[in-house]
Length: 291
Ligand SMILES: Nc1ncnc2c1ncn2[C@@H]1O[C@H](COP(=O)(O)OP(=O)(O)O)[C@@H](O)[C@H]1O
Ligand SMILES: [Mg+2]
Image 1 (spheres, rainbow, N blue to C red):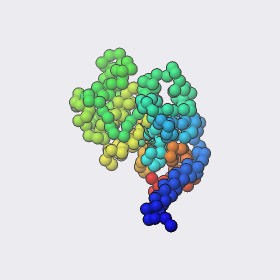
Image 2: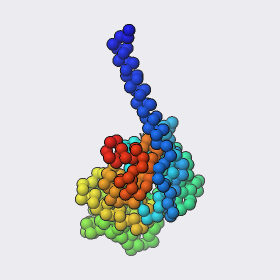
Image 3: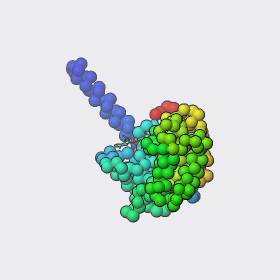
Image 4: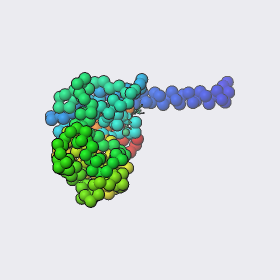
């Protein structure tokens, strides 16, 4: 007969074995992506993208288009690879030494991982806005002018002024800061800082904007302003936004992609994903049974 402690050990072993199996089962269940990952007018195309951190795989065979003038929401439980996937799209993962990306990602049919692609120029074309507003310790003006100066987009002060002002206007911030352009960006409220970061991103005339939970640190009023802004930006840009708020995904996006354990489980029109998800895992997530 087993002693009490042996029995306990056995039970623990069983449970951990079970949970490992469960993770494996879920991976199996995911299968091929359900829905239509491709669009008629793609701006960016990801094909068979795998991402590894060292030995650990974080993204499995993801294929997905970002279309012109659309907002795609990326949703799914924490750790499912949303940020990792987003970072692949402008080679931000290059800055993580153990990270390895395979597969193909194009911007206007150009391979963004090609040897002759300059990642700094790429990141001007495919800009990124982070969860936590990260203004530089510079004035409001210099924050927005930063990229334009770096890339030599203005030939004189008047041109630079023009870029700074129009970017702040597009980001819906100009009226609030017009009298203090030379005060530090870090002195603004959280919501204003996030709009400042959006202005800084827009100032280099990107084609695509990647947003990683851009409103998660903001209050409801600042969030509403950012959401309105995203809808306006869609006229001129392609946008991918990671969000934990399903209401936000529903409000700002036209298509929604559901990620689970590094796989793209389902993608479809946002309305369909939220009212009639086809995969059980998507349904569990949006009805709050998971994640
Ligand atoms: N810099 C990193 N180094 C090692 N592992 C990472 C790194 N960033 C993310 N991961 C791992 O990759 C997986 C996906 O993470 P992430 O993309 O941050 O997910 P999400 O944004 O959906 O929460 C997780 O298992 C996470 O631990
Ligand atoms: Mg994330």
